[in-house]
Image (cartoon, rainbow, N blue to C red; front, side):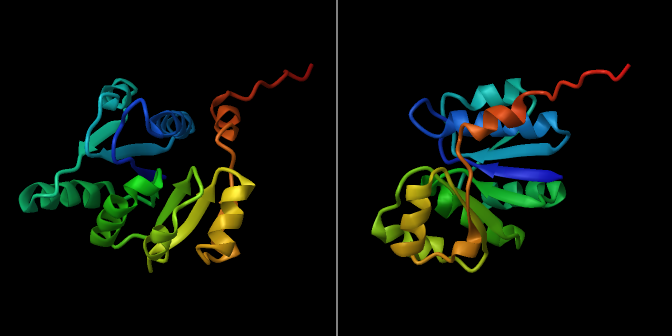
Length: 167
């Protein structure tokens, strides 16, 4: 499966650790993973792990070239890693004509409502139940679109399964 992750800035003060753990776990399971970002000091961590990284620039020619690369990659899933990355992720998903999912790490502010009600939103990952409740009750996002996946669950994904040989 081809997975495109979108994280606006790969910095120490963002959701970069979530993105790197998810990317590595998915890669270990045989998936092809790429990430789009506007930059950040931790961009090299992805490249060092063998995850192709695209820097997003919103000038006409650079963005057009990026979309050509991404169309060739043909992602099955566009996963926006946080709410700050949502406008960039939605723009990329629209140009690829792909739906997207978004992970919400904190209770969103009321102004985010319009952005979350995007036509191409396929799903929302909430990292805890309080966030899910806010998305349903305040943001009016359908319960059917939301799944609670705690960030710590990623640790279990990335650990290899040990099997005991049957004698």
